[in-house]
Amino acid sequence: MMRQIQFYAFCIIYAICIIYLAITLPIGTHEAVIFYTDESILKSLTHIAKGWFNNGLDFRLPFLLLGFLNIFLFFIMSKSYFEKEEDSFFATTIFALLPGIITSAILVNIAVLVITLVMAFLIFNAKKLVWLQAGVAILLLYIHDASIIFFISIAIFSAFNRDRVLFVIASLLIAISFLYFNTLEVGGHPHGEFLELFALYMALFSPLVFIYFFYALYRICLREKKDILWYLAFTSFILSILLSLRQQVIMTDFAPYVIVAVVLMVLMYQKTLNVRLPLFQKKYKIGFKIVMTSLVISAFIILLHKPLFRLYTDKTKHFAYGFYEPYWQSMELKEIQEPCYIAKNKKVQFQLKYYGIRRCDELDVPKIHK
Image (cartoon, rainbow, N blue to C red; front, side, top):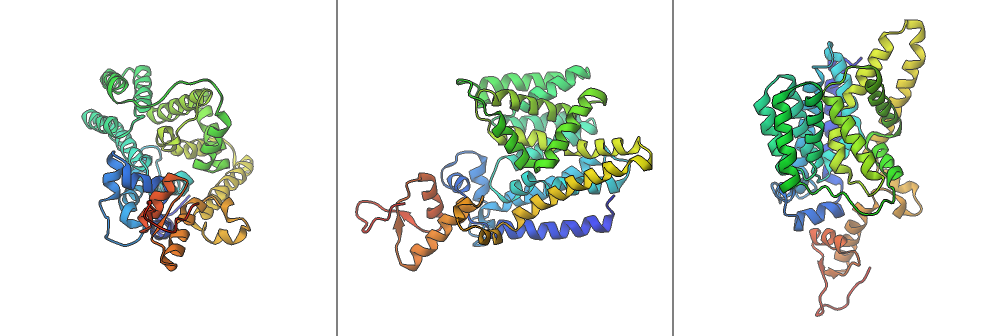
């Protein structure tokens, strides 16, 4: 497994890469809409460092710091699962390399804050600090619209484990969330978004890692002892699948409750390996190396996404085109000293606004349409 010096070296390189991404990536459509129109805590966070850096950190700094905090919290949480610190280093490295964790640290999103609260809850649960768990759960109620998913998972866990105090707390929060806070939409005519949901999970974990993660959850369900982390991930995952059968699932509603359980994947791999003689471990080690290689490749694709534009004759096919196109366009408009632009997509207009290109009105000529 991973040594301390290797882990620290990884953390330094990782931090440099993530900070570079946060600085250089142009503001996205979703980020720009939040920056100008959102009424939740996200807008407040995007304005904390406004004007400090004159780059992406002006609106991404709080999310970047929370992303780094999540890696530290995951390491603390993982120590309750592994006897050796080296195993915690390895599990934390895998967690940090997940595409969903990388993107949550560099983009404006609610998931990174939810992950922070979820892991704080799990750490307090391991230490039996009930009232701190209750405090974190209440914060989650106010911050995350879909927190009822978390409370349902905790209620199921506490019911099976006869934890009366935690069950009462979770049940009360389910009722409050359902009556006053819950905006998790359930309804419409069934039309099936199952395949799209799995594609999103594969993007969140990387394809091979998700397959192994799914296997780990299933294996624990059948044969292993189930703890609060398994109940949280499994319940959230099953609820997302059930909802996907009739409607489109918003990934940020479920991902924070599923992705934190990646430590179970590493734990399951170790158990599978340790019960076999060294002679029969080889194929399992090879398989795990293939899975980890796919994870590293997925991380590099995100980190090195900008040079990949050169490989596309049609740049619109690039997954990050929506971030760069309005930025490039704003630079072109400034070069020709055109102060305004009319975009057919109203959300793109917010991206242009961030770079100083306002929307043309009736007095402006010429008007430029997209």
